[in-house]
Length: 82
Image 1 (cartoon, rainbow, N blue to C red):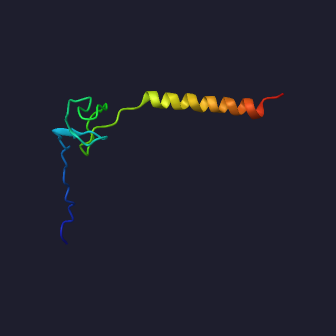
Image 2: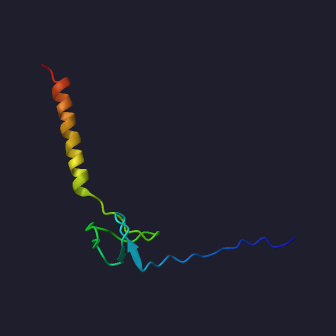
Image 3: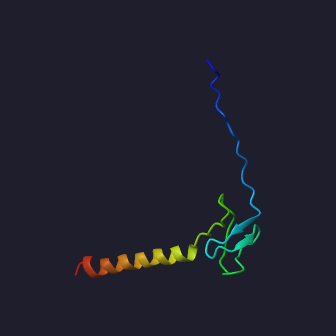
């Protein structure tokens, strides 16, 4: 019987020298926090070489406020005791 040893390949983490803007696909330096081409804020590089999109606090906050206003309107229009 032959030895059944598994070939284990240890993969080194990929070291990127640039990152890509996720909006306009422009190459950026690793330390850049803003794309010089489209002006979008970008984060750290991911495993594929793209810059991560930052969390949009303003957009989510406005969305939550709009949903709350809509639900209050529904309550006022249809479920309020008259």
